[in-house]
Image (tube, rainbow, N blue to C red; front, side, top):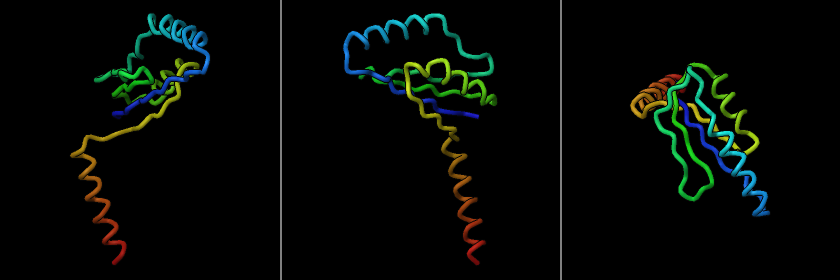
Length: 104
């Protein structure tokens, strides 16, 4: 399953707290490796410093849950399972055909 994991930084109002949080995040990230069951095709940070995205593939939902749990102290997350556009369009067409048939 392909998924997009989007994160947003939890910045506070105190600059010193933000610096300390960033330092602790960088320390934690320096030793991180993705789970073996995850293939990452894109791993990008927003240029405004407020978050980023990972596009990944895995059949192991627990691996996504672990990734989110590891960085929950620093980030808020949205996780979106996705399909390639052609596959999504085919599903939409099948859904419309089903709905038309159901409506009689």
